[in-house]
Picture 1 (tube, rainbow, N blue to C red):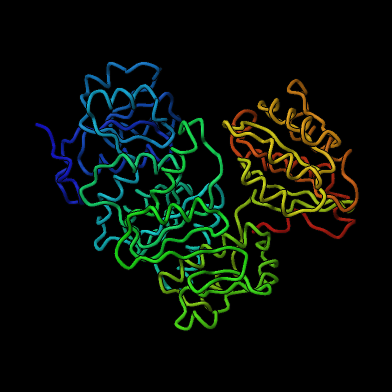
Picture 2: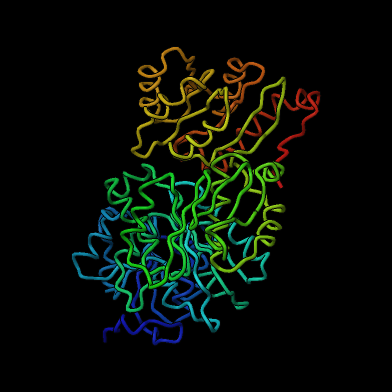
Amino acid sequence: MTTDLNSLTSWYSEWKGLRVAVLGLGNTGFSVADTLTELGASVLVVAAAAEDDRARLIPVIGATLYTGDLSTVPIELTEFRPEVIVTSPGFRPDHTLIRWAAEAGIPVWGDVELAWRVRDKTGTPAEWILVTGTNGKTTTTQLTAAMLAAGGARVAPCGNIGVPVLDAVRDPAGFDVFVVELSSFQLHYLAQSTLPEPLSPFSSVCLNIADDHLDWHGSREAYIAAKGLVFENVRHACVYNKADPVTEHMVREADVADGARAIGFDLGVPGPSDVGVVEGILVDRAFHADRHHSALEIITVEELSHTGMSAPHLVEDVLAATALARSYGIAPEEINLALRGFRADAHRVETVLTAQEVTWIDDSKATNTHAARASLGAFPSIVWIAGGLLKGADPAELVRDFAPRLRGAVLIGTDRTELRAAFARHAPEVSVLEVEATDTRGVMTVAVELAATLARPGDTVLLAPAAASMDQFSSYNDRGEKFAAAVTEKWGGAAAHDGHTDRPHTH
């Protein structure tokens, strides 16, 4: 008997016996398998490999696990005859198993679609506020959640931020609102959805668009199309970046609910439907009864500097989060309170230390050229540590635009050919040193040593790689931690003499 998938629109629908293949066993894959077995579905997890702890838990929760070569369709999968496949975001649209599902007419869901279908587990479903963009997603998600919490809402930041949205849905405490960070991968699979009740967010934001993950999506157009889905069916506020015309175009093209408003943000003076900055003060002119004549003060840039949030791209994140929180009815004074207590996660424009008048900054989270651009624009004289996996992006414009600010550069990673060529063409006067892959002292130890030979008093040594980390590190966190450790080992004593402490902006 085949289940009518259109009938599965509630936690309390008849899921029992539904045959589901789950692709991947990371955080997302495990949350999917755990949810489906709890619902009574028959679950086969298919993964190239699995961590021992998770592999041991799969039979405990009542699922079956297959691990092995996925370049061809495993016979275990075909014999299982899945009625639906729920994929982890990392599986590309051209993956063998995704293509097989399409050819076999098997629907493919992402974890977000499943979460939307079962969102009523604890009673009245939480509202969903969606956050996407090439950069700034996690910080904006955390900011928005902090603002909502300051206003008294029971809120869960979830999704691509690290807590699967299904885990938030299943939390017995229940929530008023989820702030859901969505990657372009998750949005791509949501675009394939055949949901009988389409996902309808309370409000959404796309922070910015730059070339990223083009190897996964296949083209810039496909990447933009995926991101644009965040505005579909929005009921209250579509928040877009006035400095990024692509995000405004997304809002114009979106099919939204009657009454939904377009709210712009940027670092300039805001119009009557915007949030922005006036003489160093962040203000709201969008959710203010007298918005045609005045604005509501949120916080000053100077006040943000005390929490490490005054860099221009971080101010943009604050403005975007403010618009989302204001759309939910959070008062300016409550937003101000949240901002005064906020600290960004590690490895996001984080000062490690200052020694001999040189400041060492960890922005390992700058995993693409757009994020690196924001960091490079924040400092006047830079020794730039760059490189890794470029994911199909071209760094030439980045090098060209910031060459006047560069004292020198230290290249790491495997995709350095493009960077080397960009420097030769656009910044031949900049000193470029490279960390050889054969050096046994460790990538960051050598990178820090080389950067120290280039830096002069007043300079910033900036780790903003403009690339992913998995060629030489386990994650961008690992990359940043190794950078901080190498800097501290070299300069800890000197920093003490300068009167600075180690990593002063962490919490």
